[in-house]
Image (cartoon, each protein chain N blue to C red):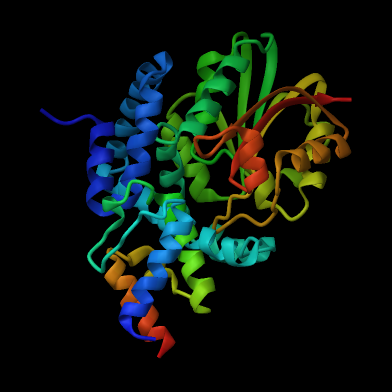
Length: 80
Length: 303
């Protein structure tokens, strides 16, 4: 799976979690750019990404993500 | 001029964890309209500031402790989302992970203390507890607290209860006792390092307070029965415990508030008054249905 496909999948998951299909994320998007992205939805998004890609983030990854791009990189590394 | 403790908290959380600062700003906006909030929070922050100074600790230390605790909660909540279970299930596990590690206990206790005036449901609980304390009859009476944590409950009880009360705080953690002792400072509270199960039933109390302990034990019913046996005839037991609240030292999972009520009844106790607060800005019923954490509290008496 390439980076663009990963970003597309995360975008779809964001739409579900934030209950807003108009959400359009880029690699530079941070939680501060999206109103619905808060502590609670952040956790829901992490769980949704793990389930979708069948991966597991480490504790420091979970608390360390600053941008969507960092999430994409981490997912890509785990998928190999 | 030095900024207020509250402004400092918001500033530092915004720098260190911008995502979490969104939640804190929302919470503060909700609480600002409350007429008790300004007075109670100011008294608390003055006391906490003084405590930090006495302990040679800084506001930075306090907020960073809180943020460490938030990181722990975040990780535990993700794992809970994956498994539907708390990550630890035995006392031995959490003892090794938390209670036996003073450095973890310290940041955890300071973190929890800081939640009182930045989490809406914790503030609401404090208000409920304070209001109910004013209705407790005075006299020559005994206050016993199990798991005194940071010392805030006993401190409020001392300020609010009328009559001639003796105050005892029991905890299995020495770090926790030391913190409560320093927070309450010089106020005639007896601090005891012991397990409640070692106390004889003849040791009756008129008000037993146990904030957020049931979720830390393997058998909460056994603990409630024990506390019931230690209540004087017209004594009251105040308990608080959360549902669906994954944390590094929580082992007993209540999935909804009804499970807590059932346990209380099974332990032979009767609910006098309840204060039930959702951790998110939604009704308790909806939180129960969606598995969002709810903080349950109640004053109980014997059957």
